[in-house]
Length: 277
Image (cartoon, rainbow, N blue to C red; front, side, top):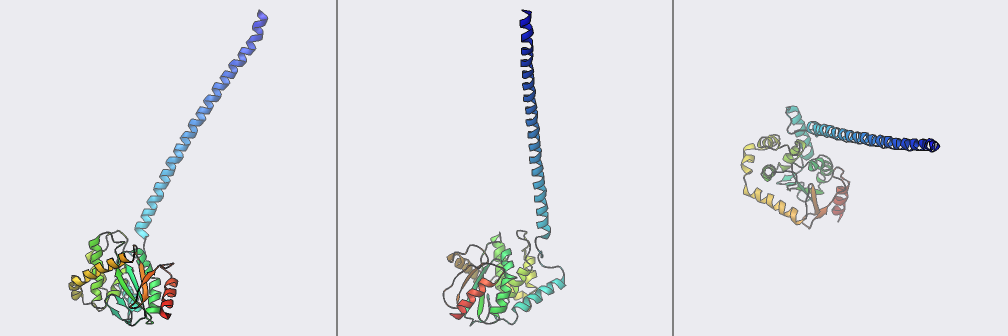
């Protein structure tokens, strides 16, 4: 009997050791899993914090440096620089109402824009300058500026600024006004296009009779033209700005979709083709 007990004791001890080992292993695995969960939570929290910091930095950068210009320059020297730049571009080219170019130009480009549209600004200060210098000044193209509300959030602000441009057109100075506006365009959605800002743009247009301009802004014919521009854009399925229609002067127009708003290549090809037809 005693031999049996001696033989079973090591077997019982081995089973106990296995049970203890199993419990210890399970506990170790549980502790490791818990530690891993804690690490994952910390990493997620760290990711959230890093993302928040990055977003904050981006917001600050956009707020403080998103544009080279933030509205009308305070310095008279800077204002004079803009005036000279615009004058160099359009002086000597006939203007009438919203049209820039000689009346007999064989090709007409209709440019639908919103004065607060940043893409319109990019186009106006890059590709358009080249187009004006090559084709408009050369007498082969005239450009009609037409209004289409896209970027401006408040319709009353859109109407005020676009009517101000059209009123300058009654004195054949519309292109000076819109070029100055785009040069001094403020931050999008910042509410910069106040009455003071609009008058500040007009004050930089050489030769503009300010009192007449203020009176002309209430001309019902200009409001009708603004509405007509919107209807023309809708009929042509133009939903964004800048947008373009092009054709032989006095004939039908078709939609022009350039490959770039900052390079004139697509415009040059379309104008050259129509000028030869």
